[in-house]
Amino acid sequence: MEDFNEKKFTVVKNHTAQAGSIKQEEPFATNKIRLSGLDLARLEDLMEVWGEKKFRASQISSWLYTKNAKNFDEMTDIKKELREKLKDEAYISDVTIKKKQISADGTLKYLLEYKDKNTAECVLMRFDNRANLTACVSSQIGCAMGCKFCATGQRGIIRNLEPYEILEQILTIQRDTGLKVTNVVFMGQGEPFNNYNNMMEAIRLINSCLMIGIRRITVSTCGIVPKIYDISEEDLVPTLAISLHAPNSGLRSQIMPVEKRYNIEDLKKALKFYTEKTGKRVTLEYVLIGKLTDTRKCAMELAHFMKDLKCNVNLIPYNPVNGALEFKKPDKKDVMKFKFILEASGKKVTVRLERGADIDAACGQLRGRDCG
Ligand code: SAH
Ligand code: SF4
Image 1 (cartoon, rainbow, N blue to C red):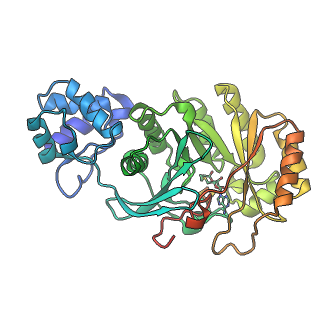
Image 2: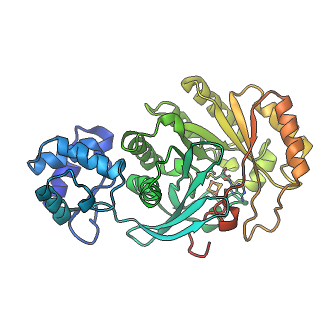
Image 3: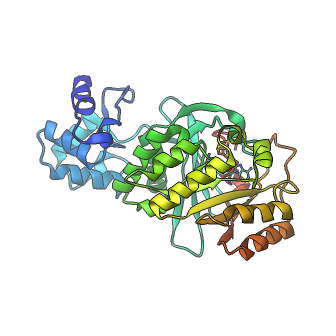
């Protein structure tokens, strides 16, 4: 089997990035082939090598990605012989649910365990008034960027997630709930642009296997400027959200170390490039920290910053994080005043609903630990 993997999954070159970047290293406890993360082209390769008809690949793909099969016995329209071969020589996934929490508002948080025993969270948000089901996925275990207000940032970086490990977060939610995820936001643990190639491959898989439209996929970054230029030139360009969080360099560098490397003016140039190149609007995320970033002065400066940028603004009232005692939640009236000033400048402003704060699933509260 190892030979087969070598031959088929590392040598095949003609399926470009999709095929090449899925590595079958250290198959799960055996020499079996992991199916999760193989797109249709790769499943077709597998069927060809097994001497099976091509259409079997579409059947398997549909069981894996549309019908959310948990085992091969469920794949009833696949002939018994092939099901037995699948059982002998393949497995679906090596990712398990270590813990599941349900918030009073219906938000679900999963702690997933990967085959090396590292863990990361994903969250499913339901909004009562909309049919959308949004999965918030992690791109790394931990994060190296060290933003002062963020629980993930306090943990440091452990490792990048592989493309299938990102895809599996959505599949796990679908298998567990029986629901179809309609939107994906890369707003869990990690800085997606520090894991750029795996993130892009995961986006391709989410788009082609799960059939989630690229306009329904959003990537949030703290502002890794060169990668903003790169993503603007991709064939598949997701919606971009930028963790701005302060309207000027001085304040931003107090709370976000990334500002010292890529400053707010260069960030703005990159955002203009993105909007011009792709025709898309960017979302500016702005965390309102009581008496620090929620002031009238900040609102005026932010309004000025946004003036010539094709953007929306998403205000996120700060969620308290252990260890960041110097920061407080904003007063409700200051949130409303801030919103009012920005709206007066003609931009669409939303205030992010606090989802799942009771289970530490809200923005910035994820840190991949069992203790919640
Ligand atoms: N690393 C990426 C993706 C994480 S998205 C990024 O920073 O954009 C998570 C969002 O929640 C980011 O906008 C992040 O800045 C914000 N956030 C982090 N800690 C928070 C907190 N304590 N309260 C509110 N928002 C927070
Ligand atoms: Fe990393 Fe984003 Fe948290 Fe900053 S806000 S530490 S970039 S996860």
